[in-house]
Length: 352
Image 1 (cartoon, helix red, strand yellow):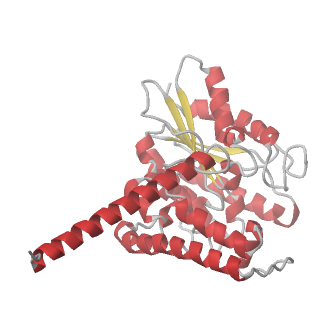
Image 2 (tube, rainbow, N blue to C red):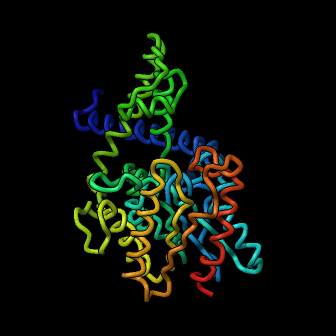
Image 3 (cartoon, rainbow, N blue to C red):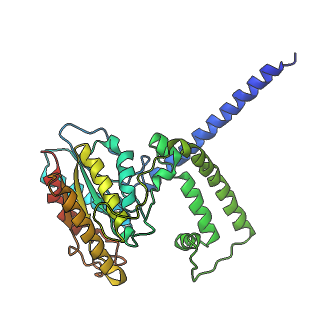
């Protein structure tokens, strides 16, 4: 007996639904496998931050979140050699009878603009102290501030808190195929910068890259569609500073100010940290930038006991290869020097 048109339609819908469900399960499983492979080294865990997943906050637990760019993330070192993990170890040694967790919420290439959306995204962690550690990625200043908030580019993360890395993995794989395995050159080319090495992939390599890019594009398209439902601005760029900061640091100061206001409004302690002094052509800009933000904090939060500024300009010489890889990113030894200086100020802000 022939199926009626309604039954055929119902059958088609059920089949399509089952196929979509199976496909989603396969994608989630693949994403989880990639997270397991990456999160212990250079990647992020499934909730979008570096290091082990922290559980529900325990009684009397001291919980700190640390924000910034690649220097806080720990570019070039493993997760347990980054500043947050080293601070956690030192705090636990100081208070062996009290639970302590320090969460690394940094993300490579992000600047101060990302502070506020990151604090909102991870508010569920119920942190006590916020450490804001970024100035390098804002060194160009106005009129083109760094507005990167990379996690929020994922609609899945914005809606669920789960951070998928499969699209990024597929895209980077394709980029590496097209550039002969040189991912750094691929990113430089994507930014419109020419590199000295020229690699011309053959037909098979171009086909493989196109397939990977196509698979990544599906997820990107979905993110763009869903992202419209979850879009939330952290604050528009400013052209003048009502906070008293001089050009070209109006946006940098405004971003730091917004993050402090948000954190203190919910009773958090805030430690703003001036990174080790840059050398070379940006040295004077870094000094000027930090002077502006320090003065802004003194003007607007000088009477606020749970806000502090800490200057670590002279803690590490970034030109010393014993402590730094590239005159900016510190190795484990350099990170340890910074972590040691953060312990006391964090304890001063943490609830007793």
